[in-house]
Length: 193
Image 1 (tube, rainbow, N blue to C red):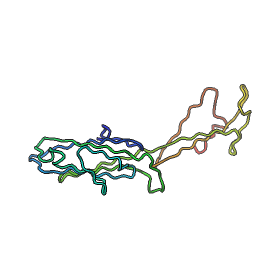
Image 2: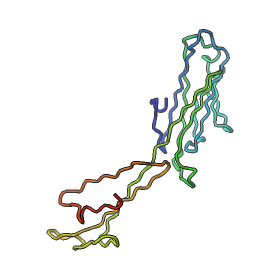
Image 3: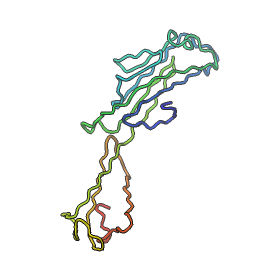
Image 4: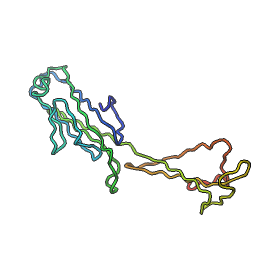
């Protein structure tokens, strides 16, 4: 689990709390096991790892628990289970420097004895909407008094831009609601549609 959820949606700036549960589902005792968790992803700030009882290996970004830190790993009987937890921050200052930096993810590889499992969490897209208002647009026919005078018609051009960080986005849609007293004019001209 990450932040108490099975399928957590990671955001830049999050502090991630991992809880890893393991259980012996076999018929024989498991003795002298090691639990290895390897983290991958440029969006993680590896300098912020905090692990209870685990040993962090900076070279390959792995955390290791064995029977010395976790007694359950010395002798895990059938049906018995254990749990480890650790924390890591995502990098608040992660910036795209090239197209290779997009579509961020956090990958967690877990190995316990002969059992291996991989989990992949995508980092949420950071969309920012920017709105600009023009009283003298070069693209459309704006007219009327500015500043606005009550009772007189004024036509503005509103420009919306979406800035997208990190992930490819498709089928995005921007919706607005005009306040009372305003309406679309010029055949509701929206470019692009």
